Image (tube, one colour):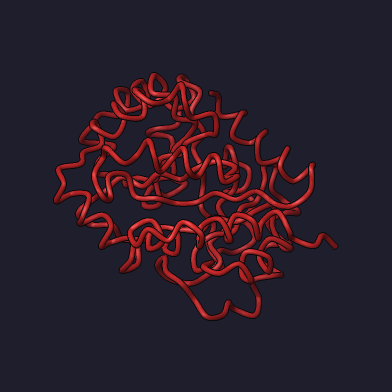
Length: 262
């Protein structure tokens, strides 16, 4: 599955009405043996793609919910290598793109060339590396491109226009629009300028714009969906899977299909 496939499935979702929905889950939360069931459930429930977090001991972009999920996964002995092996084992059953969310340290430890090769062999479509600055992304870009992996870029609310344009031009698959200032986690409300921010991104981005961070309710999915090409929901999904509340996840995904356009 190529990096263009990731972009294409998002564009197709928007073209057919509604908006794209990418749930974030922590790989191995509850045990790596549950990953197949979790991915199949999300696929069958209408997720456009899945952002699959890799547990890490120092997750600087993650809020308390995702940090706790990472701790549970690490306690279960989950590793990046183990996750890629499991994805490869079940990949023939998963038709939606999988995007890994990991940090630079695990990428270095694994080896840039090796992780690119193993991601491609497992059927991963791309990676999000939140602590990799745009200016340093060349260190992984060639290997990722060689193996047809998208390198998704994040852009913050506080980025100046010139930087926004550079990040938007560099992003592949989709542009990850961070809708809050700070770490992940549910928010009661968003900054007043978030609509202006997303409109600005859509004007300059060559790939779909996905809004993420802080989105946790069906109402927020619809609200942010009006402003972007789709949404990414993390903490609410992680909590719901941990609690076995699958109806909550179905409602979040359904909300993305019911966004009023215009």
